[in-house]
Length: 318
Image 1 (cartoon, rainbow, N blue to C red):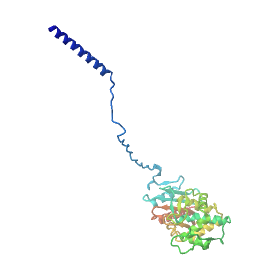
Image 2 (spheres, rainbow, N blue to C red):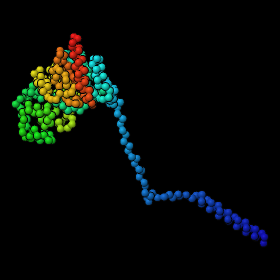
Image 3 (cartoon, rainbow, N blue to C red):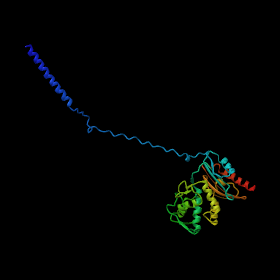
Image 4 (tube, rainbow, N blue to C red):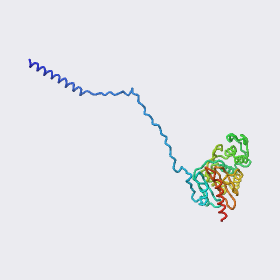
């Protein structure tokens, strides 16, 4: 009996072992499938765009201008440069250009700003030259009349009427008195491109005129450009002597005189205002051209006197 029980136990143990090993092999051969979250039901969050940061361009070093960085053009007369620097100081921006009309090597161009600046009355010099060039070339004459257009008419002007024709001389007089309608009509007649062309041929390479005279600025120029233009008139550049003289007589009759030449007791042909002014001064054996621009005009008159005194002195010592 004991033997039967022992044999039964052995058989049971063997069967259990066989079942265990069979299940173990099945587990080893089974592939493990990992199930992750489905992407179809999950809302993908869009990547937030980073805000664009506007980078500020740093100004070029050469474009920054300082009032105490005063430069004189190479070859400038040292005594004239000294007078200009001492009189104008370093607190304000300015440009000064002086040229002896009897000695091309005697000049001074001094400035702490090289760029062209907004100008008003001084820009009429270029329009006048362009007008007289057209007269010189036979395109207009003293009998030419210009009909005022609606686009010419300045706000509040009562001197000129739309669709009425006016003579060149009357319009020119009105322009020099500050009438914007007259200025616009003359500019339209001559053409902006022709005025700019005249400026360039006069040597005023940084000068450009506005499309009309309705705004606060009639164009841009520099003191050096204005002096080059006055020298060009004196030498008969662009205009012959007859028509150049007419330009000078025309600006000589315009009032008031710029403060730069007030109290100078010589022959003065000047045009400008409190920002820009240019002139030819003749008398006491000398002739010179002087132009000035400044952010402050407090020293304009003093400078004009100092330069005139200097020319008078060198003339006495000839």
